[in-house]
Image 1 (tube, protein in one colour):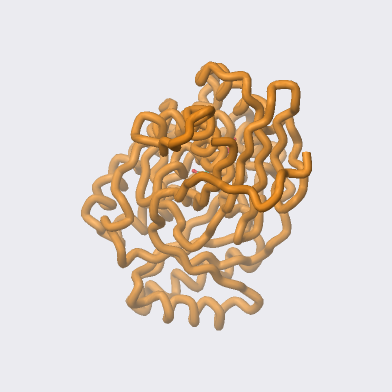
Image 2 (cartoon, protein in one colour; image 1 turned 90 degrees about the vertical axis):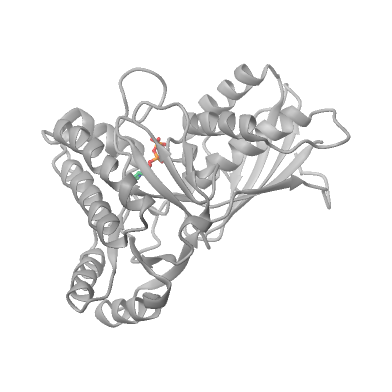
Length: 337
Ligand code: 2P0
């Protein structure tokens, strides 16, 4: 097998990863719990290349900065004892680098796809990733982007503090009525990458230590709320997690501030919805978009009230996603490289 196609979805943290351990390679300092966002898709095709050709990743046709991918590919070759190189084409159905976790679905696709290609190299009958390969793909994806360790699975996932790989908590069938309404406030790429922003937070925010300590407490309780499908408590904890993450980041020097006026408008509209008895809790990541947790039967009302309260929003409706879909790719034409 020489090429693989793979569809992945981004991993939305309900309890946030923000900060890295000073030991190891890209190990998270906080535990995180996430849901994979079915409804947002990253479609990737990966080809093997010979060892004398460079690794190359193209996103929406644009060649990406090789340095961002070098640690991932180097570790992949070391762990899988191969000298293969790779050419990947990736396209997102949603805005990239705008706080919608496109690096999680992107590196998850590379982790799963490249692992599958190496294990199938020279085989006539393709072998798809099993549990062991998926766990390895999670570990490799984490080198690229820690949130990507979670995105190799659909449903609900957990990446413990200091862990090399994520674990699946539940498939999407655990909570089929859960909905995540993504309120897009801006599609502009963010100026402050999450990687540099979280490092600045670690180095300069006086609230970084308390954030790390508190995240473990919030995560432990959120695991219970998720198990019980207790939207009220999970929503409250998700809200605490993102607000405390952003509070620690805003206190960095220079400050990390991702919010736009429209982001605050959505936050306030969610608070108003809750006073009316509508179950809607928001969360935010490294960007100005706001994601709202709610239930299927209230999604229409939540969307309408947010649209009325904040002019100019666009929306993406998501629900707990299925596992990545992966298969052999038969080229219509050879890659132009
Ligand atoms: C998360 N975020 O848990 C958190 C919440 C953003 C806010 O993971 O440096 O791209 O590549 O490991 O995974 C975004 O950061 O960072 C992120 P790196 P990543 O989803």
